[in-house]
Image (cartoon, rainbow over all chains, first blue to last red; front, side, top):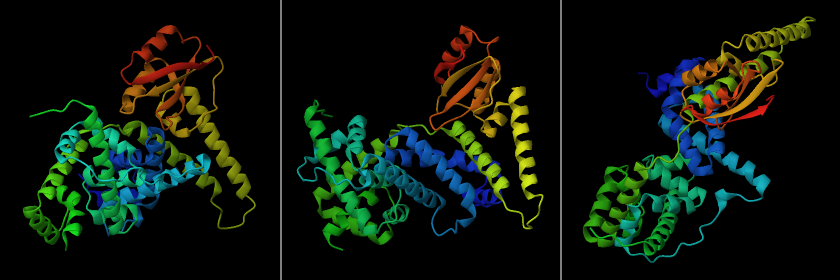
Length: 188
Length: 201
């Protein structure tokens, strides 16, 4: 099985079979990340198509400075941002720039840990984050990227990655804590 | 590195991507901080929960067919627009001839109705046989292209446009062939999300 670099070399030479293999290998990660940014499937599908078209045209420009996946997610981020801004011009707001509504500290860690085990709570609270915060959380805990790689994908300084994570953590803690307070406590 | 700086590294300690120096700093911090250990446990639960949930499915097969269609369409446009190196009198005639050839190919493919994949790649939304029923079908995101092909052939149909971003295709069926059993076959298919007659019924 060809590795990613070999596939990119073949794609750059016009090999659609290689593109198909690359698409099957990476479309899910691209789609998931786009979906996390845009919060709807139609826009995420458009971004997936745009990203893979970019790969088709620019596979030869990959220089190996970062892992292929990191480079790919960086392209996905840029396409998703373009999509958000295009939509904002129609809707008159830019969700990428939304500030968190609630960032205060006051949580019981035991409750939080139990609340975090509930998948629907986690899904709900992550959905409440701003796009930029949700991206950092997703890239850290779902894609398993380092903060340096996330800095490369999102094209922001490492310090900003850490700051966004700090704010995201606080919001998640508050949200999960409120949800735990609404449900039956569970004891093991 | 002070405790506040170390705390900012906890998410990446949990996902295992810190370098050796950072990892040692975090472990030294955790030895004396119950708060830090509690936070690590919370983050580990968060990560575990996130990784067990895959909420959305990428449209793999349909998505790739759509990409192929887009590539084919761009290449056709590029071929027609590429200027000749010489400013020859036959350049406009060549462009017309190329357009005619491509149009004929689209017409021939559409009339045979044998290869939905090729018709799909032609991107022709407007070729219609007379006396047709047009059905809109939304295929499921994980539908395999071969299964779609088999279904369309089984109902004697022909894909005239799509798939779109949400897996929507338009299928043309000759009126002499169309019946309620065609709709029943589509609606009961495991790869079809929804289907409805658009026109011609």
